[in-house]
Length: 303
Image (cartoon, rainbow, N blue to C red; front, side, top):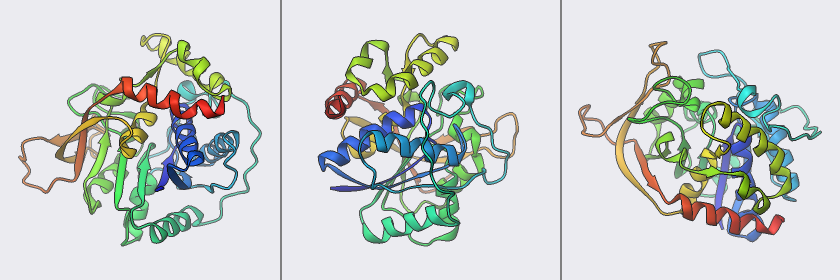
C-alpha cells in the first residue's frame, strides 16, 4: 500500500479528492497516513473539521486529522466563502467537533509519516504554507511531492496571472520550489480546469457530496463557466498516484512575491534561461475521461 500524506484546505474540490483517497484506503490500495490542513479556502481549523467530516462519512474514523498553520507566511489570510460556502463545504451541514489543535501536532504527524514510510508521497492541494514551514524547520522531507497550484502561460483564476493557492501564500510557494530536494510534480490550472463534474454525475457519487457540489455548480455558473464544477484537487491526487495517464516536463519554477499586481504569479523556465537546476515536473496534459471513470469506479463502494 502506497503511503500518502494529504495536506489540504478542505473546500469542495478537496472534499471530493479526500473521498477518493478514503475509498482507495478502504480498498487497501493506499495507506492514508494522515490529513493535515492549511488556511486557504477556509481557515485551517475549519478545513480540519471538514476533513474529519468527510473521513467519517467514509468510515475512516482512525485516520488522524490536524490543523496546520493558521496564516500565510507573510501576507494576511484571505478565504473564499463565496466559492466554497461559509464553512467551506457548500450547502452541506455537519457538526464535527474536533478538539483544539495541540501546538506542533500537524508537524508531529508529518514527522511520524516521513520516518515510518521512506517512500511517502505528500500531496498538497491547498496553499503551500505547511510545506514551506516544514521545509524551514526539518532536514528530512517526503520522497515524493505533488502540488496543485500555479498557472503557467495560462490565465489565472484569482488575478489575470495568478492561481488561487499560489496567490494566497506566494512566499510559501516560493520557499517550496526553492528548497525542495527533488522536483515537485505540479498540477496547474492548465490541466486541472479540465476535470469537470456535472449534475449528470451526481447519482454516481456519494450523497454527502451532493449539497457541496450543488453550491459549486452555482458558483461556476455565476462565473460564466456553466452549471458544472472544476475539481482541481481530485485530478492532482490521481496524478500523484499514477491512476490517470498524464504527461509532464521538467522545468524550473519561481513565484512572484514582491509585486502586488503580479502577486502569486508562477513562472516556469522552459528554456533554462536562468541556468538553475529543474525543481518541478510540470503536468501539461492528463486524461480527464479516464479520471472520471476512475473516480466513479472507486467511490461506488459508498453508494
